[in-house]
Image (cartoon, rainbow, N blue to C red; front, side, top):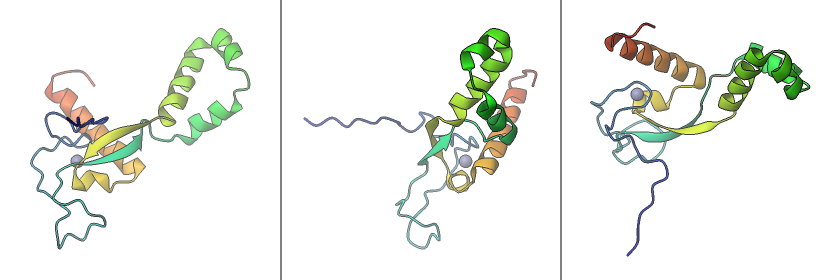
Length: 127
Ligand SMILES: [Zn+2]
């Protein structure tokens, strides 16, 4: 028997991982101006960097010649910059609705930030 292995399965709650919507209509059917054949999909898997690019942080990371020395002399800065460097260079799968899958990186993170802030507020957490 063949087993189907899914490395990045869609989210269990079937919600868009960017905007959190669940009430999507299937898209990509005939007549949909979207390029690509999505054949009535609700969510599409995109691969996104895990952190928005930040020119200032990029410059700081580039200037570091000796990470070991930085970790000794300024562990907080080293943590912050190495964390940024790892995330911005990591790509993860993101299941997104039709509205979110076409966003560029900047808009994607903006939208996601708004969604997460309202989610936290709804849970009564301090943001
Ligand atoms: Zn979405």
